[in-house]
Image (cartoon, rainbow, N blue to C red; front, side, top):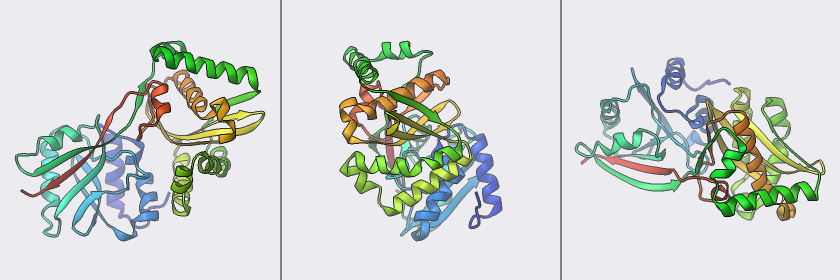
Length: 316
């Protein structure tokens, strides 16, 4: 991927910070942020702050400094830190406020398992810090086997999942798998977008022309870096449900999904996720992250809430 509008020294520092960071998600990747900048960044001034032990990909608009990205497309944000020393964050905030035009720093989508939450919470003596619960992000800690996973579900949910799998097996001929190959993933993108749009009116409204363009470019860019998994469920050789996930280290991040409502009676949306979890266990992933939102199926599949925070920092 080309980075024509970002200086080489910044790219080099960003890439090194990604390699060294003690906390990282796919949304921190240079290619993810650059795809967002190319599609949505024209109204913002990019502001990259970095030092020996940190890199902060930020942007500025009307005196407000925020992360590069928007929460409708980005589930998590982060400052890349290679040293857990809180003085790093103090230095960063002081550096940002050296610009007299900066009125406040508004940081959305900070996951509760990031150390940033504790860092900012400890800055209240020096700055005005407001922290609010923005959303939840359910996740699973994956055990060593499918049977162990099933045993962790509530009795009702375990019974229902087994019943739905049995009904699928007894009713139709089906197949389900994960695709990692970039060319194959991109061959299936149009079909994925179609299933996403017909899943619900809300998803149809969400996937407008601009977001569809962003989404296709993002998946193309990240699949070339081997960061994407495409999962599908076919009934009688027709794809009726699919999803796209990021993966990084030992964590799989479910980014988006879609299904054909005509097959609701077979619970194809939920089962596509269940089979993806089963394969993730077999692949020895440690975490299956459902990401932002409290949709019911996430809890039926055993999801445990992780909080996502928004943090506002202003001068006293």
